[in-house]
Image (cartoon, rainbow, N blue to C red; front, side):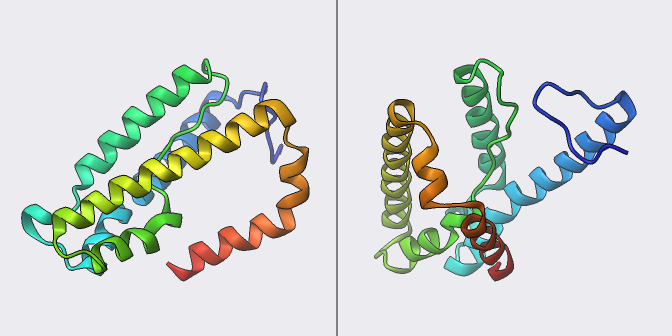
Length: 151
């Protein structure tokens, strides 16, 4: 059995359905768990709590925008990021009110997005070789594992 697929490869229909269900379960769990974790860490309840429906809506819209910008060449779902849980919790912990905490989240998201744009521009002109030297797989793998295990 083939254990990997290249970009141009397409699995058989039966495998495709199984892979789709697996991906759906992983995506739903990851996207819905982030608001739950932030709500419990920050003590948010009722109307102040982060909405799981908003997380799903934002992930869906973000994915559609991404697919349009990449001209359907990169079939990726953009869900909630566990990497920002610490900073999101800190935004509420250091805020004088929930509204200020949400404002902190918005500013953080804008600045994180700007960092991504700057890196994308550098990659456009310089290529990806410098990223592979700066962060080889031996560094990225354990970093992702630490984030996952710490949750």
